[in-house]
Image (tube, rainbow, N blue to C red):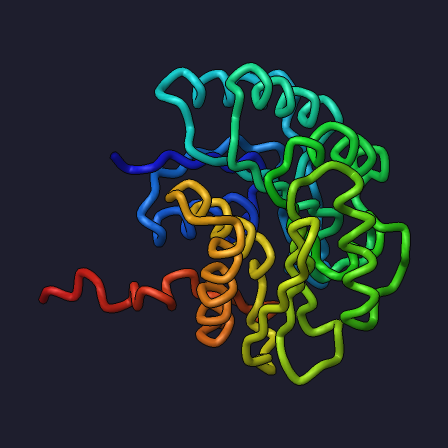
Amino acid sequence: MIKKVLTVAGSDSSGGAGIQADLKTFEEYGTFGFSALTSIVTMDPDEGWSHLVTPIEPDLVERQLKTIFAGAPLDAMKTGMLGTIEAIEITRKYIDNFSMENIVIDPVMACKGTSELLQPENVAAMTRLLLPKATITTPNLVEAGILSEMGDLTSVEQMKEAAKKILNLGPKNVVIKGGHRLNTDKAIDLFYDGSEFTIFEEELFATDFNHGAGCTFAAAVTTGLAKGYSVEKSVALAKKFVAAAIKNGQKINPFLGHVWHGAYNRAEDRMNEK
C-alpha cells in the first residue's frame, strides 16, 4: 500500500516552498500527498518581490480536512504556515478525532526574505495546541531562538540548550536547522530525542538558490516517518535529500532560486523517451 501523507500549510505561488514543496517531496519519497491550504503567499515583482500572506477562511480549511479524512487513515502529517488561530484549532481537532500519529510541526514564523514575524498570537496558539502533539518539530535557528526564548543562537552549545527548552513545550523530538546563519563551514543540524544529541553535517553550499529548503526538510522527515523509519533515520535521510536539492538549486526568476526537489532521485532523467 502506498503511504498517505498530509500537509496543512500555505501555498507558495512561486512554486518552491509551502504545499508545493511538500507535495513534490511526498512524491519523490513514493507517498501519496494530500494538502489543506491555510493561506496563499503571493509576491509582487513590481514592488521588489514584496510578500503578501492571505489567510484562507477557517470554514474552508475545515472543509478541506473533512474531505481529506473521508478516506482511509493517514500515515503521517505535517504543518507549515498556519493562517489563523481558528485553522490551528481545527487542525488540532482533526489530529485528536483521528488519533493521528507521525506528526511533524514545522513552526513557520516568517516568509523567507522577510524579517516580519507572522502574527505572534498564531505562534502562541501553534505552541500551545500543536507542539504537544508533535512527533518532532523542525525549527530553523531563528524559530528555535523564539520558541526557546533565548534570542539569537550562534553556537551548537546554544542550540543544545534551546532544544532542551523546546522539548519542554511538548514535542517528543526536536531538530534545529543551523543553516547558513550558524557561520560554520558545514551545514549543521542538531537532533535531540530527550536524552541524546545527534549532530548531522553536510557540505555547506554557497548558493542563494535555496528557497523552500526548510519546508522540504520537514516534508522529507514526515514521509520518512510514514514509511516506518525511526525519527532519527527520517531526519538523517531528509538531511541528505535536502542537501542534494540545495546543491542542484535552480534559478526560477530574477528574484530568487529554488531547491530542486527531484535532485536526490535524478527526476530530470525520468520520462525521457523521444
